[in-house]
Image (cartoon, rainbow, N blue to C red; front, side, top):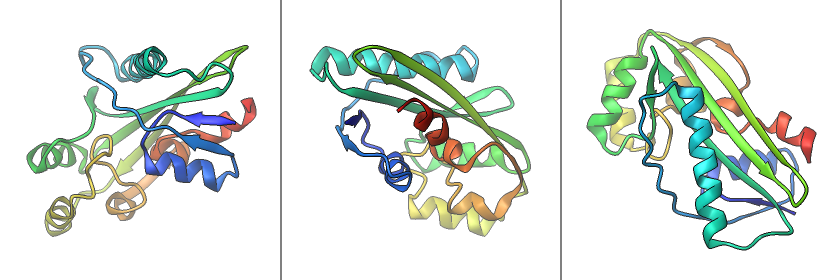
Length: 181
């Protein structure tokens, strides 16, 4: 059985929607890496750090383990999870009328192999309405979302064009994952 080493409700829903059997193990990670590298390297390092921290404290040696993370990049700047309304507003203002890349990485570890995947979805966004922006921030729905992005909610009506899959934008490339299960 697959062990999702994450507390993400969205990733759990994505796995359920694909009919993948799994159990979810919540784990608090220290994601305190420096952001002075490009976004694709950053997200990969975070996933590897999650694996290291999880394996130091847990024993699931005979199971398939899944470690995941996502980051957002706007004009080369890495955006992780906003900690408060002010951070969320800054992130969202950067995204308005811009090209936004969402990079999702996963590491699938089994007793016999390790598979690493990096996927990217790029959104071309329209200008955000100021009232919509205020309502979104007040709702706190941005919390626990990389770059304060909510493709299935606030951002949906502002997407002019999308390159890549919605699942990658939501945090897990399930099509690639299914190929290795």
